[in-house]
Length: 205
Image (cartoon, rainbow, N blue to C red):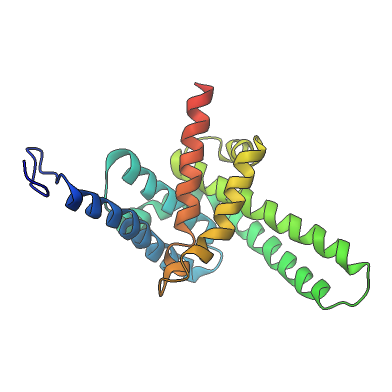
């Protein structure tokens, strides 16, 4: 069979298939990211929207379901019903932490430095936990999400650092793309979290 020829199952072999597969790993997360941005117009909807992204991307990974944009939109109502209270509280906490960091960053007193470090550490833990919460909620909407999120985020130091690195590096690595941080900044950490969740599940089973 020649390079790029279609095989008997309708797939493509050779370098053309590799290129198409690589494009999928950009296009489908970007489509989920676009749906996430639309859903986040409600401000307090960011957490259920991120969980809906996790649900759509997990179906793409497991079942090769390429409907990442519509899948995210379809998963959102169920995630909103499950997480809206948590989302309201978390949004208020996030706003308070950001205001505190902004206030302390402008203070000249030496005591502001350790307080700023504490706030920054709290913000990092906040990001890791809520990424893990979105991942486990998207993976199993009816499961004990909060307990599983704590285990995923803080049950292993390496997992926690990997999640934090994904949150920090994803927007930076996608800066060369025009809207990369906007579309891929949320979805690449979710993909990293889904991969870590699958590995943790494999090691405990």
